[in-house]
Length: 493
Length: 95
Image (cartoon, rainbow over the protein chains, first blue to last red):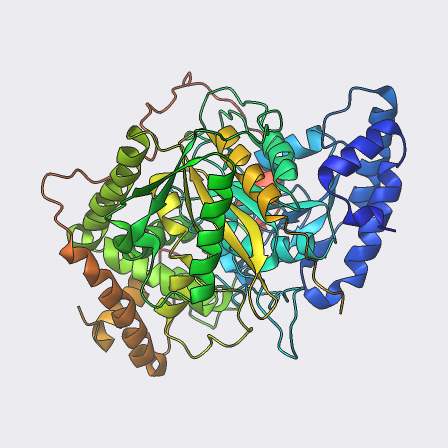
């Protein structure tokens, strides 16, 4: 017997529409699971009153008929999204106490569709991290556990990944700047899609690196991702990079037929020292696509190895500019000042107290690469390399490739604290397979495909043509069905 | 490119983040490591390549130059650490 909180969005939608389940009962089941899941540290601001009010309204709409897909579906919202009157801190002390006076476009769309917000989800501070260890709320614990160690759920959308994997909610919003949806999805055995840049409005989402940030859904299945993504997308005049193009019916695109489609296998993703298990997983995925009738094509994306260094110039540069707004004047934390302190001391003390070490480091790297004398050597060179990385993909797609299959991560989930003594660059290597997609603005999806020898989930990534989330999700659907991944973490929390 | 303590101090100042003198050597070391990682970009031939300025080639949308919101002073100030008489309050800036 499964509890309602364990359902997929698709199953819950159908049950709600048939009247077999009420939105209030479904929400109560999730609220109970959420409270019982405190050891995971996934939810950091709970909103049960809002959830029940929304659930009651959803039941009225459902009874009237014609309710949207997400009507009555309980979701978790990453702390990066501004939610009116509800703490929205980007997991940073510098936004302590901040309660937005406005609602992000994404959450507005979700609520208009009748979705239920259970609360705000933990993440890496300002989405800067790959292990959810930079959060002001403390680490998120991966529900997957194989020994005494506590494992990372990945990051930066670690709270979203843990909450979905542990059935605390039916789905969650994430954001992805360099892999922050796809890497945690892979580490927790769930599905996560980063849409094409411009598909989802960034308005009301705390900015990290504006030319790379995109929001997307994190779900228990590819079908759920299709349903959820459809509700997040669409043109928004308040985001100048929002694309004014029609949103297709992503769920209707899940035909399971990819016969004759060309799947590119980029040789540059076969990294030195890549674990044999990752290589084997990739080969399995290739075989699954082939069995489904796809044509496998070896391709080359020659500038792949330069994606991480280019990313770690561009993302910190944009972050240093975006995070200049946190100055202790308009919102959030302000440092206590000593006698005689002026406005410069206020800025410097506020930012030293409010930002954690990784955020400070990235702001300073960004400041350096944008400073006089280094702008051309670092920032402009990185933007030129970015143009070449994008061109690599364009050439592959121009040659007829429909989707590209790669590993999602270079390993399965690692132990919390295990990277503490590592060089910051070592942590950055987690993004090696995902970051190219952000630089090129493409859609990418992580699908759980198997368990490693230790019993931890591993995912594969599919990369699609710009604006072809529909085709991409159909490829992901084929991979999901062929892999038949049904493992769930054993409940210990 | 190696960052020395003086450069680390200057960068912290530009970023308006107070860093204790004792922490500067470690910061310089970490910044050097990250910038060393970026040195790989020098291997790439970027001759004739324009820096990427826009992810999706598109003309930014224009709108009429008219006031579209306003009269929300209370909301603007609601989250301020210190607001007085309808203004954000800060330490004295000019003598």
